[in-house]
Image (cartoon, rainbow, N blue to C red; front, side, top):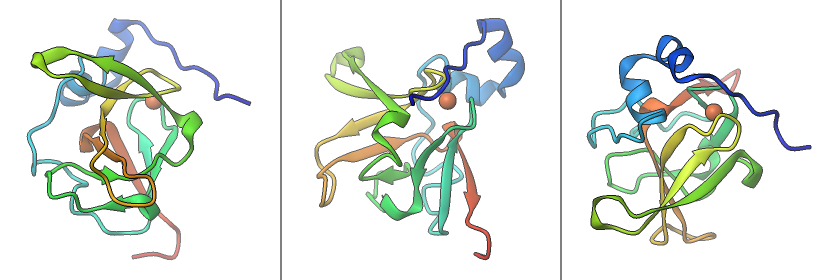
Length: 136
Ligand code: FE
């Protein structure tokens, strides 16, 4: 069954999110590289949407792309994310959105590692990490 959609008004998002989260998740901003909380995180666990709490990515598919943003070769479930064409800034990129709340997460590129060859380049601030229980 597809996840239940989370919908809020712009005002509700402004009140719910921090200013930095709002800028990325709702206004499709990008945090500066090497600035976020998660790009160096190697702990085992799950990355949840900072907007709605849906599970989006797993440490199992995280790798160090050297980009300064948390990078994954797959979402935790293809149903968890949606895609949109993005022609902003004179580039043609594929935007990655949370399927549940339509929050902007980042972009996906075709220069990732096996087995998918995909690089999900995701803003740390769009994610909340939760370590697997029993892990440090
Ligand atoms: Fe979400």
